[in-house]
Image (cartoon, rainbow, N blue to C red; front, side):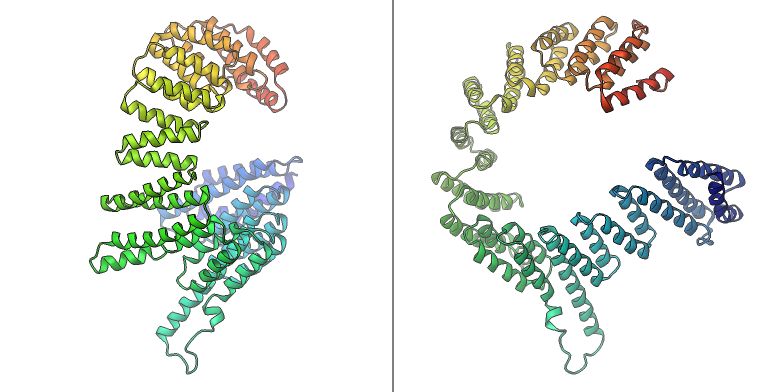
Amino acid sequence: MAEFVQQNIEKMLPELEQLERVGVFDKHEIKAIIKKRTDHEYRLVRRTKKKEDFLRYIQYEINTLSLIHHRREKLGYFFKKEEIEYAIVGRIHYLFKRAIRKWPEDLKMWMSHIEFCKKWNKRIQLSKMFASLLSMHTNKPGLWIMAAKWELEENQSADNARSLLQRALRTHPESKQLWLEYFRMELLNTEKVRIRWNIISNEFSRPEGSEDIPDALFQGKAAIIVYKKATEAITDDIELILPFIPVCQKFDFTKEHQDLIYNDLQDRFADHELTWSALAQREMQGEETAIEEAQKRGLNHELAVLNLIDKASQVYDKAVEKVNTVKMWSLYCDFLMEKLQETASESFMDQVSSRLLNILSSAQEEDKVSEEMYGSWVDLLEQLGKLEEATEVSSSATDQFPQSPDLWVQRLKLLAAGGANQINPVFQKAIAKVKNKDSLPLWTFRIEWAISNREEHAEELFQKAILSVKKWSTPIQEWYVQWAVVSGGIKKTRTVYKWLRETKFVPLPVFRKYIEFESGQLKPKMKLIRNCYEDALREYGEAEPDLWLALIQLERTHPDGRPENAGQLYWRAVKSLSGEHNQYFVSRYALVQTGHLEK
């Protein structure tokens, strides 16, 4: 064992001698490096090898490289890199390979090695590494895509990228992500070919009879073939086809591709809401061009955008006639809402918001308004200052979706803006309709209203909320304790804690918060703190080792603590905790005993 370590250290001597000779490190630093590396080498030759030992060694060598770089910058000496840096880089590669061979399932280690190779521009190493990685993890499409992307964009090899994606698709023929990436890769390759051809055409005269590059390559026919193969492999899935559209839109030569995709949508999914939405959105593709042309001519570019919105709206109007569903109306409204948020111009907002309000009214007449649409509708009316209309729509919304806490809160906020008269009856109606587990936002609003208006029954509301929401009431309980501290001091807080304890469902954060308040008093009462810990341990002692440790540490260090109780608490904890919790507790308790764990 020792001879292997010594042999490895001897291999490092040439680089260390160079480092000392050129003045990067002095003699004492070289000795420290040798000692550190020897320690790491001994850890790696243990019978039971640990991943952390490899990672620490690798990190040490990377830090050494960084330090050498800074010293070189300071000295202005940049020679002998092959004898120094490259030797260290080779050692790091070797360490990574050993670790990966031992733990091939650890993807983080693979990724760390890949990033290291990229940093040092080790292309041959990377190609081999991706091959090994994919042979071990063939079931992860994302890794195939990462390897192909590197081959195309960094290694400048379209053939290798294409080969990888084809292999991946033989293994995962139904992976939408792989098909989309293969399609994008072919378009990128076509774009590169077109750019090169244009450069050559501009710099050199073309030979006679060679005016154009071959159509199949120049027009991206390969991408069309990929798209057709994808739709053959995964049939009747609109979620496959739609993502191809934004990919096409990034290139200026894909009109044929887009026509094919849109025709496919109309042929295969004529009555699907997403088909109509895609057709309408297509009318907006010339938005940036229209804005640029209007600005060049000195015209109002908002008019150009409004014309495009009109064209898209005409498609949506046809859509809601033929596909009269909630989802179709919702997509129409989402489109207009998105356009409304893209500008702050009043004239533009007036026209788009007017159209949007009309569409929402039409959807309501057709009984096709979703919960989200109602919420957006009320927000829009409120933003436009139409509070009466907003209140009416909000009332309709809660009638249509009586179990929606968000719509009820929205309605209560509108009522609060107009006065307090109707708050309580509407709140009571909401509580009766909404499920207890979903009613937390309602109770939160009502308590906030009571506190801000200094109502006398705020505490009663806290207690009703906690009893109603029960196991989902953690935020309310923490708030209740905080409110008690602010409104009545520690005496009130103790009364609140006593009441909470009687409910039998006090969450752990509330125990911790109360302990924090008790411990923060000028004269903390150890008996009350200890009792709170005991209450918490009865509820959560089987899965919270830190709770046991905190109490043990308190007994050992607090002036009024009982250090003699530490041993008894230890054995209680060992009996209560199991599995990983038990192991964690035992190891941390050892640190407490040696004084290495202060908190």
